[in-house]
Image (cartoon, rainbow, N blue to C red; front, side):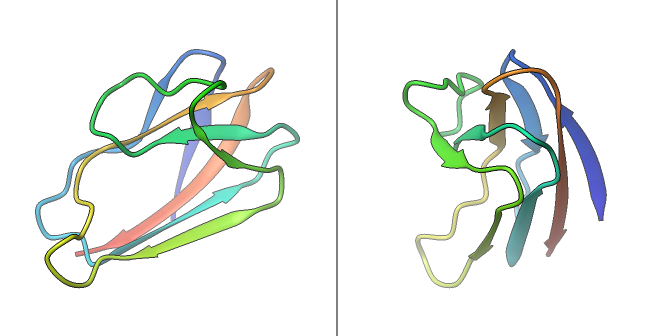
Length: 88
């Protein structure tokens, strides 16, 4: 498991991975983190997928529509510790 500090600026949480089978994210902080899965570095609080404090997200990459691109996040406030794990 890896720990990534996410701030109020868009932060790369996971890099592109050609053979990613799954990934998991856990918000170990006190503030919501908004995620971007569109391959850009523009995670925003207005358009991102919210990952609330204490919440987790697991994505299984099976089939032709697997997401292998980068994951970016931005904290609603302060800094947030996001734990990640992936397998490929």
